[in-house]
Image (cartoon, rainbow, N blue to C red):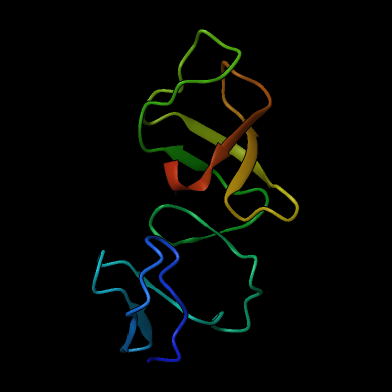
Length: 112
């Protein structure tokens, strides 16, 4: 039995190391086992894996429905001056031109 952790995406127990990454043969997901370059474990990354910090500008990569609003967030919408959600590396806060007070998952964003 390997000493590698289970896959965070599918939970598969057969992960193996390949060039500094862990790979799941069941779903094909690749991830890093440890933070690199002195980064903390709660780093916030966009859909492409780029590091996000407070004040960055991001772009929405797909149309999203917004709870509590009849206006959807369209692909290509720019969100300027984002804020990181404390203790949650998968969400950021920000404002678009038409909608204020958005909380968006980082998997739907890319750094501009």
